[in-house]
Structure formats: C-alpha cells, structure tokens
Image 1: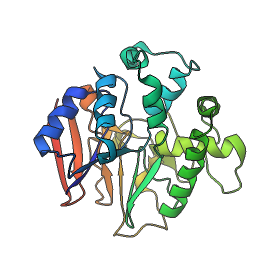
Image 2: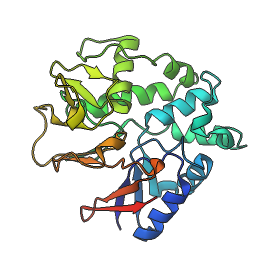
Image 3: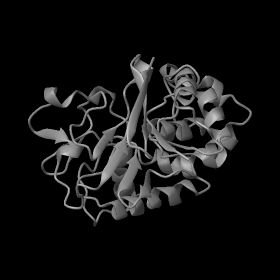
Amino acid sequence: MTDYVVGDIQGCLGGLDKLLTHIGFNPQQDKLIAVGDLVARGENSLGVIELCYSLGDSFTSVLGNHDLHLLTTQAGLKEVKPSDKLTALLQSNKIQQYIDWLRQFPLAYQYDENTLISHAGLYPSWSFEQAVGYSDEIQQLLQQPDFAKQINKLYGNQPYSWHSQLTGKSRLRFIVNAFTRMRYVSDHGALDFNAKMQPKCAPNNIKPWFTQYNPHLSDQHRILFGHWASLQGQTHDPRFLALDTGYVWGNTLTCFNLTNNNRISISA
C-alpha cells in the first residue's frame, strides 16, 4: 500500500492519467491525496472530477481556490471565466453530485502527527492543531444548505493579518485566504496577494510563508502544498514540499510518495 500526494491537477486529465500509469497506481491498495485545484484551465476538468470521484475511498483532497470558485460559479454567484474551461463540467448531469462531493473536503488535512497537507501552506503562526481547527470552521460552513452564498461572502483581501480575536466574516475570510491564496507574508504577518514571482525576484519587505519563523514547527514536521507554480518545486527546506510544478503551463505534474519519500514528476 502506497500513499501519494499529487500537485495541482487543474483539469489536466491527460497528465493525471499519465502520472497514475507511471507510478502504477492501484486503487485497491494505494491512496491518492490532492493538494487542491483539481479543476480549471486544463483541457478536461470534468474528466478529472469523474476519475477522482470513481476512486472512492482511495482518493481525498483539500480544497484550493479554483475548487472554491467552482462552488460559487455553479451556484450562479460568479461569472464563468472562459479561460477556466469549466463548461463541460458545469453542464454535466452529475454536477450537483460532484459539488456535494467536493464540499466534503477540508482546507487542511493532517496525514499523520508530523505531516500536514493544504493548498497554499501553513500560516507562519499556526500549529497543525490550530490549522485543522480553523479548517473545520470552514468545513462546517460548507455543510450548510446555503454554502455557496456563504463562501461567496468571503471573497476579498482583508484582513491581511491574523489575530485570534477575529470574528465573523473577517475571521473566516482570513482562514480561506491563508489556506488557498497565500504565497508571501510580511515580517509583521500580513498576507501579500500581489506577488507571485520566484522568491529571488520578490521585494525585500515580503518573504515566502515557509521562510517565516513558525514556533510550532520542528525538524520532524513537513508540509505539502501546491498553488505556487513559479517555485518550480523548490523551497530549499525539506520540511516544505512544493508540489505545484505547473503542468497546466506546459511543465510537469508532480506527486510525492509518502511511503518512501520519493518525488515523481512527468512532463507535459
């Protein structure tokens, strides 16, 4: 039995098929865990959802920003972006079944005592326990009948920084942003949503979230995340495993074997 974590698939069914064949994935024995952004921009988001759904208990995921956008788009609360290529998925006669399936997934998934998986990473002042608790707050919202409206209300950038006294929409918005949109953070803990470049090209007043000191992390901890293709899989710290390697942009699709700690990539 082998457990794999796969980077951003983004609707690239051909790449996912090729990767699963390459690793010899057996859904009777193995498990596939996705870092989110299952859909959007690739050639076949419907096919990706159909395949992942068909794996049953052999598949799980955390939600990314594109997955949340799908929830609000399907509810008619956001405009469909032609570049996201979601038409076939949205027109599927099983779309409501797939939406209900997606909203069961969390924003953060603790694989074991020392391993956390989320789409964008771990906010620098949060512990694993806190992260899972904050993720649970959003998962409770996703179980409500008006989940899409509730998620739609959380779009926006502010507040930029976290403090435990945050309440209401401000608190929930920050949690969603930290788990699905975060890349750079200032020394004062403020999220920066404009910078997407490689760290060597970033302004001096912001740093990648994984280089900011987190008092809760030890050398034994590891965080697997996606969302940041321009990192090209490089964090230069073995605790932080960047798995979005930009397959949808013509680069590679990457997965990490949690059983033997090997990284596997296939080219677009």
